Image (tube, rainbow, N blue to C red):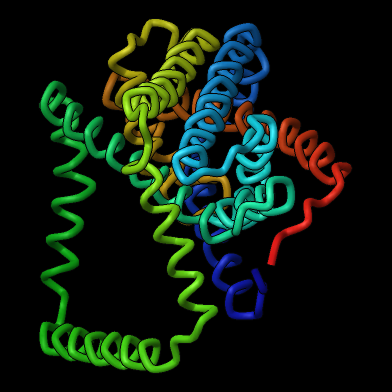
Amino acid sequence: MTLDLKTAVKYLIMLLIGVGVLYLAFQGQDLKRIWLEIKTANLFYVIISSLSVWFAYVLRALRWQMLYGAIHYKVSFWNVYHGVIIGYLANLALPRFGEVVRCSVMQRTEKVPIFSSLGTVITERLFDILVLLLTSLALLIFQYDLVFDFLDHHLYHSIANRLSQVNYIWLMAFGILLMMLSGATFYFLRRSVNKKLLRIFVSLRQGFGSYRKMKNKWSFLLYTFGIWSFYLISMYFCFSALPSTSNLHVNAAFTALVFSGFAMAAPVQGGIGVFHWMVVQSLVLYAVSFKDGLAYATIIHSSQILLILILGCLSLFLTLIKPRSKIPG
């Protein structure tokens, strides 16, 4: 991946947005009191929470390994695991860059064409999006009264106010221009297609078909359920790290999981700022003060970042000292 000036500026803007949201979250708060609460947190529960996240990473590696097996690549679990962890490490620097990086790791260690890997990664992400949508639906069904005020205040009124200010003539003009650009792009790509692009397309299609070709689909779905279950366990155990959140039940952890899932989908490095704000908003629904919610969000986010930094650097070191595999062709 080439990091040109335009791309660098885009990522810098995303980082600044995340830092800005983080600043707004902490603005007006008693920082000394929040820091005191963080320092007195029960480290045992923080460690258990971090271990739960690590188990989710292990299941991610096992799930990804299954997708490779479905397209006839017999890959080592440890190489897949290192690819997953290094990908998370790369995402701390550039959002979504980790998906490309972990595919590069598999190319280096297992000779898997990068676009075949990319197809399996996209398949993986589609299932994660499906789970996030299903958990969001469950949240709306079983805790509708609780989240209605949040949806009404933060989404409905905000969108309604924005729409009332929209110039529909400019909006239609923009839509027509977008359609013309899309048509021109498609025409250009179809005319300029060559063997290399065709090979890329075939590799991507091979990765996309990995789940369809899989023999034991139930194991894949079980791994997916396990990944999100460990994320939920991580949220729940971290509640016990602070006196202010120790009385919260698993339903609060489920709400925080859904909110944080949407936060981590934002194109911001490590979800910084957006993660904090969304988790705090989820806990406010359960009568947790903004200050206490911010302390909780800071602890769980920081512990996960530290985990990725430690495991990521270790996996990167172990991968780099391995001899590079020779890629056929």
